[in-house]
Amino acid sequence: MRLALFGDPVAHSRSPAIHEAALRAVGMEGGYEARRCDTAGLRDGCDEIRRGHLGGANVTTPLKVAAAGLCDRTSTTAGRAGAVNTLYLDEGDLVGDNTDASGLRSLIGRLPTLPIVVLGTGATAAAALLAAEGKVVTVLGRDQARAAALVGALGIEATVAAWAPPLPGQIVINATTLGMDREPLPAGFLDGQEALIDLPYGDEPTAATSQARRLGLTVFDGIDVLVAQAAASFQLWTGMEPPVHVMERAARG
Image (cartoon, rainbow, N blue to C red; front, side, top):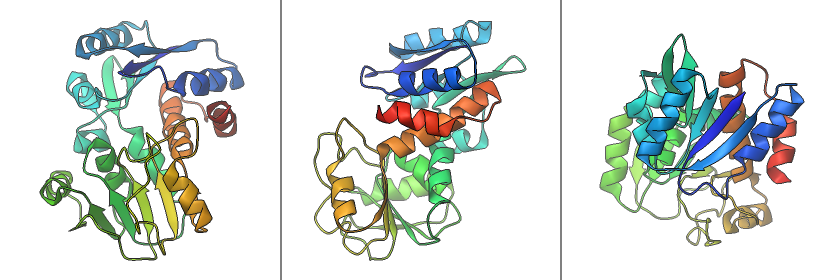
C-alpha cells in the first residue's frame, strides 16, 4: 500500500516512520512518502488516490481546508470542521475525514470527566472542540470575536473567555502553535490544572509539557496526539486494527 502526506513543510514529519512501521507490523507491503506541495500538488495527489495509485493520504498545514473542497464527500466531523487530514477511496469516491478530532477524542476518553479548556481559534482548535463536544468546554483565544465565530460555525455549546489563566481543576488542550519554538504558555495557564493535552511537538519536550509534569499534571504530548490521529487514519486505509504501540515506538525513535 502506497501512502503519502501532503503539505508544507513536511520534512520534519514523523508520519513516514509511524506508518511504515505500522505496515510492517501487520505484514503489509508498501511505503509512506512525505510530499511538500501546494494546492496544485494536493489536487494531483487526490487524482492519484482516485486512480488507485495511492492507497490514501494525510494532509497537513496549510492544505487541510483545501483538501475538504477536493473531496467527493466528507465525514460529518470533517464537514463540520471544514478541514480534512485523511483521504481515502470508498466505492469510487474520494472521502475526507478528520482524525485530528477522533484521535483527540480517544485521548480525552482516557482522562477523568472534567471541564475542558481549549486554547486557540484555528483549524486545530476546531478539531479539539469537536473532540470535546458534550463536555463542559471553554475556549480561550487572543481574538475573542474569532473564538466566538468558531464556536458558532461548529454549532457546539462552549463558553468563550478572555485570554487569561483559566479556572483551576480542568483539562487544558493547547491547540495553538505555542511550543513549536520552545516558547512557554503564558504565565499561570497551567497552575492548578489536572491535565494537559499539548499538540505541538518537536525533538525535545515543549516548555508546556515540561512545566505540566513538574506541576504533577497528567500529560499527553504532541507525539501522543500524533499517534492517536495516525492510528485512526491507518484503520481507515487498511481496515485493520492499528498497532498503536509499534507506531508510538516509531514516533519516539
